[in-house]
Amino acid sequence: MPADQRPLAIFLMGPTASGKTALACALSERFPVELVSVDSALVYRGMDIGTAKPDAATLTRYPHALIDIRDPSEPYSAADFRADAWAAMKAITARGRVPLLVGGTGLYFRALQKGLSSLPEADTTIRQRLTEEAATLGWPTMHERLRQRDPVAGARIGPNDAQRIQRALEVIELTGRSLSEQQQGGNGERFPWRVLKLALLPADRAPLHARIAQRFDVMLAQGFLGEVRQLRARGDLHADLPAIRAVGYRQAWEQLDGLTSASEFRDRGVFATRQLAKRQITWLRSELDARVLDPDRPWLEERAMDALSLFLGNPR
Image (cartoon, rainbow, N blue to C red):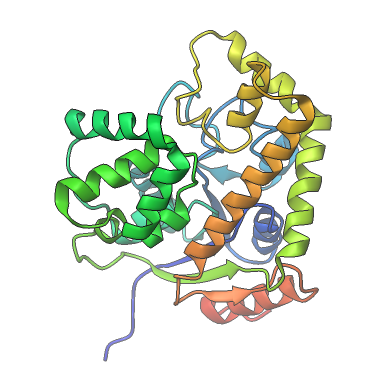
């Protein structure tokens, strides 16, 4: 069998607050890699504190492609990401370097490597009926229906994510097939890069939960609510935009609407972030070809560097 001559790429994946950015920066000090962000919130300009976006000094020293490329008023889809990431990876490869994609948005990683399926167009009649059912039963009950019919999508989508629950149920009704099955998608073509996948998966979630809470408190101290006030003051943003539905921002928006108290906002924000991490971990466990690393082990960086040394043929 001939040797695989495809150029190399690295996927560094993990749940929120697992230390992906710090590890990616450390790896870029040792290896000829360039970083590409795989995060559905970091694409938006002006959303810095609540997304835990790397600060300006970090981004100057360790540039990341696909950060700050959209205004919050503009939607950004998996298809958009695939096109942008593909272009960034080609440019990095052309420079004789290796793209290292770092982030936690599983849908983006999957769309990049496996392509996108052709899902049916929206059906206004079905959507209206599902909306009416949700008004009576509540979106958590609709989510339970989804979980029973499509466990993978049910694990990935939050119980209060009305838009995604509705779309997933709509697709099932239109096609008779689950959304997750169809999102495997792709056209059967081979991915143009040979990929090393590293997955940061904690053996014990307690330290991850503690970091999530601590980081949220740091965000509050840094002025997260003030950041959201500035976004609201623009006048062209609303709670149904993908940017504002991001974890933390949705809860902050509700707090500024007077729907929750300050303490309730903090607790709801931490809980939503923990639920996001849970969904990310569920997805990562399906990536059976990934090398698993525990982010809470002291040898994390060393083992990651060993993996890259072997993959790149670049002994340390």
